[in-house]
Amino acid sequence: MKFLHIEILISRHFKKSVFKNPAVFIITLFIGVLLLYAAFSGWENYTNQNETSEKYQHESREDWLNNPDKNPHRMAHYGNFAFRKSTSLSVFEFGMEPFFGNAIFLEAHKQNTANFSEAGFSNSMLRFGEISIAMVLQILLPLLIFFLGFNSIAYERENGTLKLLLSQGINWKQLLFGKILGVASVIMLLFIPTIVILILIWLLLQNFSISADETLKMLFFIVFHFIYLIFFCVIAVLISASSKTSKKALISLIGIWLIFTIILPRTTQAIGAYLYEAPSKIQFNSDIEKDILKQGDNHNPNDPHYKAIKDSLLTVYKVDSVQKLPFNYSGFIMTEGEKISSQIYKKHLEELLKIYDKQNSFSKAVAFFNPYVAMKNLSMGLSNTDYDSYIDFQKQAEDYRYMMAQKMNGLQIKYISNKKPGEKDKPQTINKEHWADVEEFHYKPKGIREVLKSEIISIISIILWIILLFTAIRIAAKNLKAI
Image (tube, rainbow, N blue to C red; front, side, top):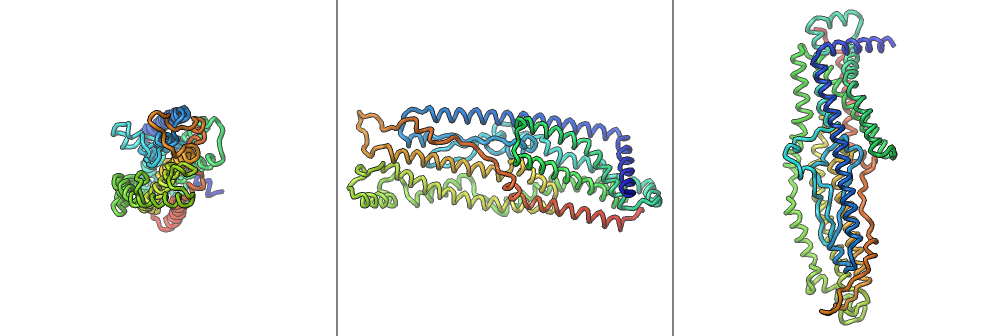
């Protein structure tokens, strides 16, 4: 208890001395205003995007259902849209969402990519990054922490009060923890109100109806950001304690901040992309098309693969023409073609994703050397604004597209005659009520288990950083000198 009492006294003294500097008020106020702006812009961005997605998802569904009686194959080509709604935590962590599309056009025989990203409709300033609560917490608050803590002990050494403090019975461990608490108490004046506003907005967005999964994501988001900020409090005090002057401490801390938040993230992304080069979109689509043509062309009646299928069907049903088959032959062939093209697409996509996984794993490995990368990856994962969430949306949309196309092919097989209509005959159609057999698309974000599994490297690295920093405090308490 005596240790705790001394620690608190040092913390309170540091807090009072910090606010004697008017610059601290100005910087703290500025960051507070930025946090409020980030909360407002996040709210506005979330509501606008989800209202737009809901509107056009509804219109797309109505267009699909309101189609008249039609040939099912024409309906498969008419297509549908899949929209991705933002999750509630994306209000605070924009992640990669502004640069990834949130809508995919789904049609038979063709896999499209997501389009209509926010960046695609914005000016180039967006590429510098939008101001989000997560960005302020992860980049600006650590800089403020370094500004507050650079002279926490170095200044005491410069003016000679450090010797006086240590001679009065205060040991290095008490001094270090006291200063860390002091820096943390100042930062909590911004962090705690931010979290209160964050939770309130989060509850309002969900009409106070929350799931256990979303609650766990929010708790992880808060806890890990708190730990992350404490990291920087510890680093600031340790660097100050090991520096002979405040100037050297400040230069060292600014260098650390630049390396953590700017240099390392950019460098590792570039190196990962260089080491594991991915094919261009044109090359990717061209390779798929080549493999499909090698397998067979379902629009060519003389194609060897599909001719063999036709011959086997005629043999099994003991007929001499496809017109005499008890089901629609074209629909059957389209079903086979869709199956083949979908399997080839998935094969090429998996190969492409392996390349991207290698690129990302290289960047994620840097989390062991950089808490910012670990926190950023985990934050994006919890808010479903990371790359994995984008790929998950693509896969869900592709599964839906395949189901839609095969459902239409199945209707063609069952209800459309093999006999082609004459010039004066009406086109072969089925009742429009069948369009409702295809359910509306709804994107399902990754659950907390999937997020923690995909971000296990970030979690382990954060735990290792905790152990490392507390070990560093113990070592520093034994080896630091007053001079």
